[in-house]
Length: 125
Image (cartoon, rainbow, N blue to C red; front, side, top):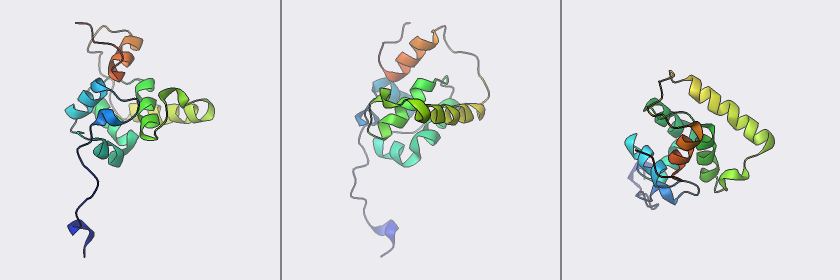
């Protein structure tokens, strides 16, 4: 039987926020780029998903990127150190280089924007 006819037994509607480290703000950002489930995010992987965010106008933030990477691995966001963190920085810089630099949408500080992206603080209006 062809594999495309075999029903997928894995639920396809698990919220993105069910992934460790990812909260409602990240879930909303991914929804805006068409990523609506944790399964979809896992299939895409951190790099493709983060690139979609960047292409949609999300400001690049290294912490936001590696939080996604760590979450997809089921690890705490702050578990990334040393050579692994340096390698992720190179991957982040390569992703960032693929998207033309856009002017900031807000006057948030970089820290406020990163915390907002992670859903840690409520966005100031």
